[in-house]
Image (tube, rainbow, N blue to C red; front, side):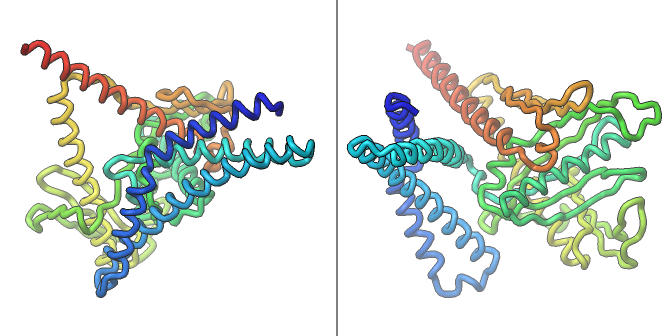
Length: 386
């Protein structure tokens, strides 16, 4: 890397870091950490274990974010000094080391930038993901199971804890649906951009004539409710049915009615849960997921009202958000962001960070465009009343 290239790269890094620092607002973050530390040290905090875990998780996440920002600022200063020292002493090794370090800084800045874009109301929450097979018969059920594996492998790559809450197996192969939880701060913010319809095109392994098959699966991502959300559901609004848990092909895996089907009567929302050992545990898990879905529904209604007040603002995710093509060529392409790769097997093995990062940037851009359009319409309306 020439001195000119290094200088341009360093200037770009400083500019990106300034943008990140402005979004994070380190001083406000320090104040937030101080408030959380006070909550974490309060007597009786662990009397409510769920709330205690939320507080300590938020504290750990905030501390980690501040540490990453501070360390990044120091790394940029250090690499600049390293370059200057190498030039002064005509030390080729030090100059080469500064080139390598600037490359690492540039990559790490991109990762840090993504974390600053996760500023939505529920982005810092843990996530509950549901995958459902769609059109395509047995291929769609198999495709849904492939997606489940993909997301679980993604979480495994990042050392995120996951818990499968419910699985409904299809008769011949694959799954009808599955719900799992990702127990990691900001899991919802990251995975929420994965919500939508995923399309697979391949030679069907279930067609003895070897024909090409297109199948679909839907991915739903919701934030996990917290104790402070206050989503109260009267008992009269819930119907609970119990049944025996089942495994692949309908084979019984126990002889007790531990599985739970919970129906929210006013909305018709249905949640099934069978992966816990007891009916009480399944009921509690089902209630948590139901509360999460009602929370999302409430949020969507609020967003819809805001949209109506702001006028008709474009920006829609649409149904089909990503295509996975295995025949006649190899390609995975996101239809919203344009991000694509021909490394299909890596994607199925959980290497989807590029898609997630591109989705987060795309969503942030859409939000900024919506805000600008709303401001322009509001200004025009105000001007028209003069």
